[in-house]
Length: 150
Image (tube, rainbow, N blue to C red; front, side, top):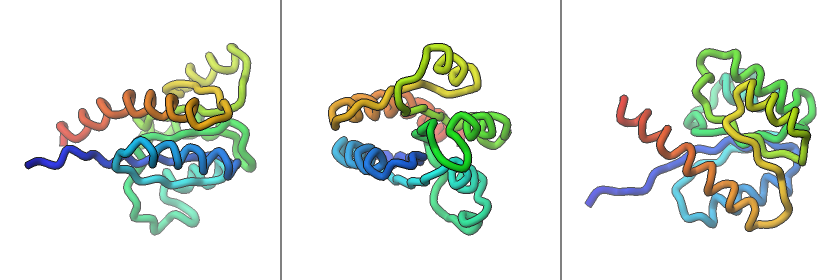
């Protein structure tokens, strides 16, 4: 019998350890096969994605998606998103903004830069669970298309 479990690789970029923990817990509770890597600022995010700096010898799989907070130290989420979308190797990487409430103008700007979607952080397991379920529904077809092209 063929194994139908799929491993998803998440990269969580958020400077709040409580939010990171909640997102990790929601992913675990969904019962999927996963890898999770967490970084705490925009510079760590870029180093991880580009395998530079402290991640130059990293052998973990490239992430299937990035869960990106906007308000991070050293390099904001918005600045990191712009750098991701300017890098040809990262153009197809799904990036989901998960941040505090912001204006509609700011949301449209982020979507225009290349964010796949925007989610407003809300306290509680249930709201994070719905958000992660929606993200999985969005990236699963993308991952299947990549695997079938290999």
